[in-house]
Structure formats: structure tokens, C-alpha cells
Image (cartoon, rainbow over all chains, first blue to last red; front, side, top):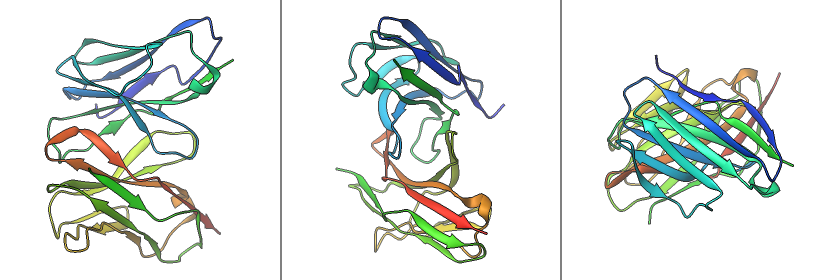
Length: 113
Length: 113
């Protein structure tokens, strides 16, 4: 299995809703990432988990809450989002080491109404 | 700090034309370099990589050579196809903080039949 699987593929939520994005990989990668990508822009790093512990938080608003229940799963809990949070949310994973690069999922297209 | 600079797009070519997308980088150490491709509505896919100076990465007819003296990693393909239409991102991974990728701004390639 060489994939990162993200669910759902599309999500529309209201500003008062609570929802979660899910990400799963079975490649044995010990680093997992959440990125946010706006149209025509490169991905922006949000969070990094290394060995199931949060190692990087790029000053993301608290309405985004990551969780890593085990080495294969990564969640992103969403609450009280704003319309400007609408974007493509990408999950990625990697082996430890600079030479490996990331494996990305296909993303969740989030629309906040 | 580390950074990646890509040529502005969009780049529009006819099928079978030669492609070059320029990428230069700034890094304090000896980074690994990557090209990712993003097709419409999808996540990023690793296209090729190079982990040390003078290495050449190649995949699907695309090539890029890690040039330390010019701090460049230009992407080339001898004969593009309509199916190569996508956004291409150059990226680097730092030896001292490999959990943080630095992406270029992306270059959109349009190939016309």
C-alpha cells in the first residue's frame, strides 16, 4: 500500500458546524502532515506529527485542531470556521530523513458557507 | 532561510515541444530537491528528486539535475503531451529540519494539441 487516503473528498459546512477530516496511511511512515492549499498557490504547512506527537504548529488558529490517534491515522477537527478557511486540505506522510519526500493524499475540498 | 523560486506561469506549449521550467533555491546546508506535479482536482504527486549535487532525477520523460554551483534544479522534458498539463512545484527539504518542506510558487503548464 503506497497511498495516503483522505476522507471525505468534498465537504460543505456551516460556520457553526463541527466536522472532521480523516487521513490514513499504511506505509509505516512516522511523520504526518496537514497542509492547506488555496487556489493557484502552493501548499502551506499547518501541522506536523512525528512519532504521533505534534512537533510543528505553524501558528494555526485554534478552530483547527489536529489529532493523531495512532501511527496510521491523522485527523483534523474543524469548529467555527470562517468562509476564508475554504480550501483544499492535504494530508501527507513521509519517512524520517530529508531525502525521501512526501506522499500526499488527494485532499479534501472544504467549502465553508 | 531556505526558499525556492520558480519561473512565473502559465507556460503554454504545443504538443511535442521542449519544456523547461526554471527553479532556483536558497539553502544553508545541502538540501534534497524535488519536483511535484498536481493535476486538476488532485493532490501533489512526487515526479522526481535528487539528493546531492550533480544527481539527475528522472521519471516519465522528465529530468532535472541538481546544480550546486548555480543553485538550480530546472525541470525539462523533450516532448510534452497534452496529458502533461498540470501545475508543477519545485521543493526542497532541509537536512536540519526535514519535516519542513519549502515549496516554490508553482508553474502552470498548458499543452495544446
